[in-house]
Image (cartoon, rainbow, N blue to C red):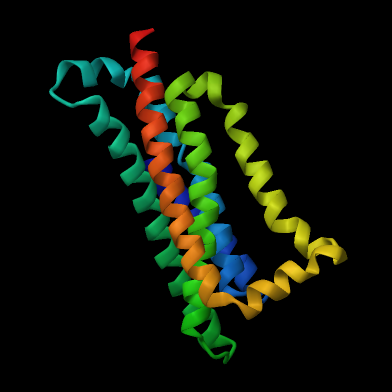
Length: 202
C-alpha cells in the first residue's frame, strides 16, 4: 500500500507538471498509463520478497485466480490513474479558461488504454514465467518499444501523416484502440496462465 501511495503521489506531480506546460488530455492520459505500467511490477516484487507462492499453495486459490487477480489489480490501478488525470485536467482547463471536449477525453482513454495494455500485455507473462528478479531487465523492453512508437511520429516529419490521420479519424481509432487493447489483455492473460503453470511445474 505504501508503494501504491507513492506511485499515485508521483503520478499527480508528473501530470501537474505536464498540465502546467499545456499538454493535451491525450498526452496526460498516455503519461499516466505509462507511469502505472511502470509501477505494475510492484506486486511481483512483493510476491517474491515475501515468498507468497508458499502462501498461495496453503490456501484454496487456483492458479487462474492468482493470474486473473494480477490483471484485475493492474487494470484497477490504470483506471484510478485515468480518473485522477481527468480530474486534474478539468482543474487545469478551468484555471486556464479552456474548453473541455468529451471526444478528447474518450480519445485519451483509448490511446492510454492501448499503451497500458501493450506494455503490461508483454510484461506480465514475462514476470509470471521468470519471476521479478530475472525479468526486471526484459520487462523494460516493451516500455522502450511502445514509447518509441508513440514519440517517433512527432519528431520525424515524414511520419507526420500519422498524427493528421489520428486527428481526422478519431471515432475509428477510439473503437480500434479499445478493441485491440481488450484482445491484447485477453491473449496476455492466457499466455500468463500457461507461463505460470509451467514455472510452477518446473
